[in-house]
Image 1 (cartoon, rainbow, N blue to C red):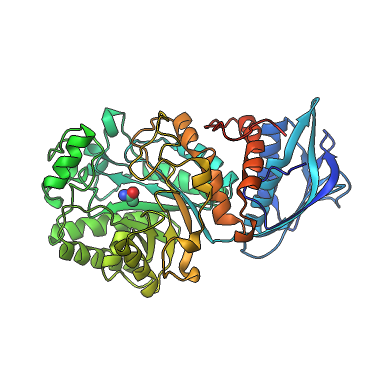
Image 2 (image 1 turned 60 degrees about the vertical axis):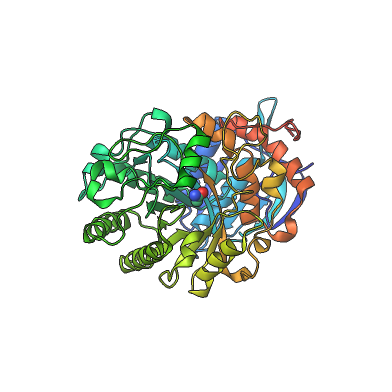
Length: 499
Ligand code: ACM
């Protein structure tokens, strides 16, 4: 029998037979594994209807034992025999529970778990997904649902793309007009919205309980049209050169107009005023409030697609904004274009070029490593979760590629950017841009199953990479995702029958 696990654990030994769950099953916590006990209890209640007693008694056969270790790693051991024993730090126990969750099966009303012995640890420290809440605003409940899904696949960073031409989504006390005037709409006139600081704290807390760190992004200096609805003195008039006019024509979408909401999805026409003191006062206000409210180490400052900005201005901006971010106590993160500039030491670069990058994209990406930083790989032709699976798929875009499940799975991080040392790779991230996805059901369609492919690339040892094995395991997970109430696409090249 195949164990339907994704990502594939570092080491799995299959046992024989199953452990049966019953109303007598208990959760036994050892050495303060209370948080994991509550996660496991909720998982079991939702999936099986059983709500085991949580006790600190000596374990006996049939129990689900959670043994907490006092380290801050993400590794865990999971033994499923006469009883279940999971051993790990808080994060490790959380991941052990997610593994167990994928093994729960029901037959004739009886729940059981296949016997196995698993020793597991991630390949990369950074395993991210990004949700674009700017092109379409998603409420707190939807973001939490996204965290549920992502954390079940052992993703540990949630990058929130909080601002773009189409809207500003986080309240900033010192700049209240941003949410008063620049948050009202989404792409194509869909409803807008924004997070109050309490909303944002709620997301951060929910993410932390699921062992995910929130990475807030304020996209700069481009993708800033919306700021002009609130603080017009901070932004330039929309740029319209031949390239941008051609883009607007090919999209069949109107040109941006200063002071009016932008509802299309053309890119590259907006910029803050790079050399104005007022801009830097604005940026200090905004970035210091974001740094204060987001407890994680990273603050993403964008840097992508400044198509109308002169190179020298762009570089001057990036140098200054990464220095400001570092001064505010955060590690700056920026899209790879920012590698053209003298980024602050230690800035993390996020590569989003093709899986066979241009020489310039590769060079800009290596610069982050040369300046003491590391790199997150999001090759848009493989890891972008918003690309269509097939040319006729109803959701998603195609500008980077059409990405079927095999293409999403079949790439190796160390082979993307020539000359980038393996040690410089911090991890991988799957961005989910939201121009075409107004609902959670649509998010699921693009997320499942491709995010599972990315999860395996980020977590499993390179030696475990095997498309035939993955397609078998992921196929078996379809029924598990259905049971969790998670929809998604089920491409016909995969056998989705329950096993
Ligand atoms: C990007 O896709 N503009 C990062």
